[in-house]
Length: 279
Image 1 (cartoon, one colour):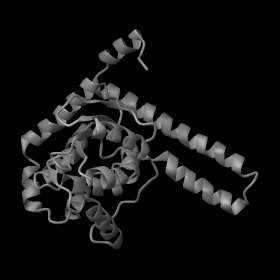
Image 2 (cartoon, one colour):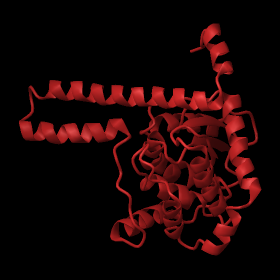
Image 3 (spheres, rainbow, N blue to C red):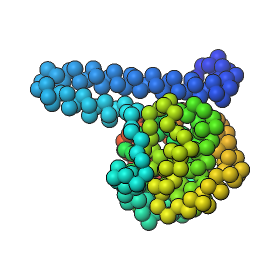
Image 4 (cartoon, rainbow, N blue to C red):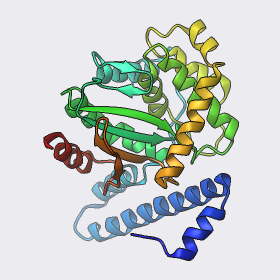
């Protein structure tokens, strides 16, 4: 739906920081509305379900719909970390990576995924919808996915640049997707300040086969910081203010916005990918 002219003029007048703050406020309002809607639906079911089952249902619904539940930090080399590592390794096993790209270079369809590693809705998309998308379309050779950075949830620009550049540095060893998948699975509570240098290094230590000395050196490569800025400019040109955000199209061709009805289900993405794969 198009925005009124006076609102478009207002958007152009805002600084990037102001747009991020507006997007964060709008996203949190949507999350609160989702939780409230889930609570209302739960109250209706209480008429027909025993109290113990209802209590379990409330927990399940809130987790499924809110997408922003607190996730405890996981220390490297613990059982919980090894479980995450195993799941990520299984998901990505045998799939080609090249920098920020996951999938075969000959895949006919490209999905550009704009995300912030601290964005809880990005986490919900990554751990719910993205897994089957990778399993079906990327592993099947029909889809390649490009990950791009867009600051929305991370409050401090320098923290944002540091975490996103760290992911890109892992991509220099074809390990970016291992890094971002691990980060999202172990994401902490938004606005809690959990992303420290120690946290970033802890994620890197969980990436199997990552040469940490090389990774540390490549984090200082100015071209990686330039790539983060280039991603921001591309997102701005596409009119994106929030994350996750998506562009989709035939590889090498024009890209268009993909605005799925759900970020936690693969079905809306499956439909768009299937349509393009047949064209």
